[in-house]
Image (cartoon, rainbow, N blue to C red; front, side, top):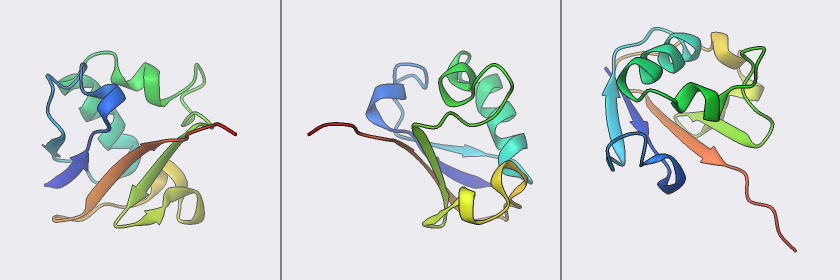
Length: 90
């Protein structure tokens, strides 16, 4: 099982849960399983082509997946995945 930390803006899709336990072998599979558990969340995380949106950062054990293997990043039992929406401002 992988623990997924859900940010406040997406909690309405997760039934107000801030963390979910999901069975997944890669980040790509995790996104699909999240969609099954929380319908509508994939659209918030990914664009029409299925790529993670620019303003969404996904971390596996505090490592940005952009510097790992992207959505092909392997997941292991006990990993923690954090969904971090980018914050703009000035």
